[in-house]
Amino acid sequence: HARRLSDLMKKRQSTFVEDIERLYDVLERANSPAGLLVVKMREMEEGTFVGKVKADGALAVISKRYKLDDQAESKLADILARYDEAKRKEYLVEIERHLEVSNRPSAMAMMLLRKLGEGQSLGRPGPAAPGSYADKQRKTASSGGDNDRDRDRDRDREKERDRRDRDRDRKGDRDRRSRSRSRRR
Image (cartoon, helix red, strand yellow):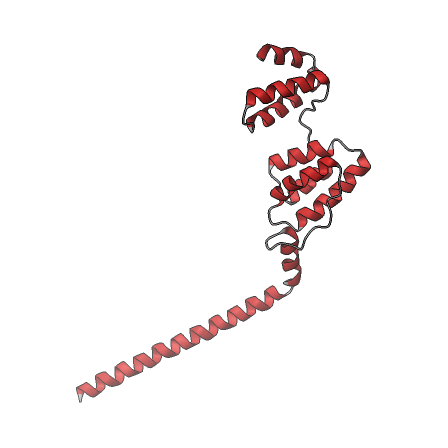
């Protein structure tokens, strides 16, 4: 296989780095790397093999915002590269809507891959899951100016607790003093 791969890669000098990165990613996760390598070499011979595609600007922004892992970002980039610019933008909007309400965006991206590959619409996203980006944004927006009020309330409670503790301490001191005086008599 090594000689065949070497011969194929000599013919693909312009995409050599991307092809090797793609082969490495795919073979690293394969159950049978040798068998998959044969399939990928056949794809190269037929002209259907596509090397690793870098995430374009819009996908990179989405990936960073939702903290997608490398595998999810790479697979989304591969699938989106198949489509023209208009369809890609349309899909990016749909993908972002789904990632926004998911508390596990990388897993959500992986689940969307099949529909993206088949060219289907992703459908309506569900409600915002607890811990999702949308949920965090909503909580931040709703607690906007209340932070100062909460801090003041906490400070007032703390002062009241301190005052009560001091009063208790003084009371204990008085009781001890009065007991010790009564023993002296």
